[in-house]
Amino acid sequence: MIYMLAGYLHAAIHRRVREIRRLAGETGQGTVEYVGLILLVALLMVGMVAGMKGFQGKQGTELADVIVNKIKEAVDKVAFK
Image 1 (cartoon, helix red, strand yellow):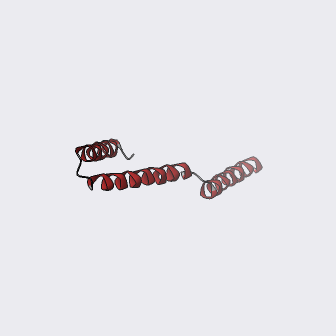
Image 2 (cartoon, rainbow, N blue to C red):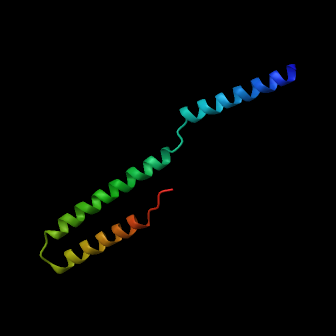
Image 3 (cartoon, rainbow, N blue to C red):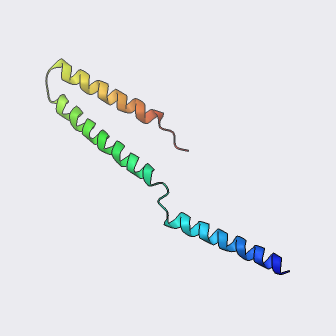
């Protein structure tokens, strides 16, 4: 009987410790950092595209179109699980 009680207490304590570690941990922090970095790069690219659209030259609009198309392709490839 005492072994069953000890086993139960051990399992309960182990579950609680795992839950506390999960709540206090930094799980997913890397994902947040990557998303922030991607947003920063996308913002810089949007700024470049907006700046290039102001030029009347053909090269500026071609570059802007290439950048926009690449961003759209990358966004279309993202799949949330």
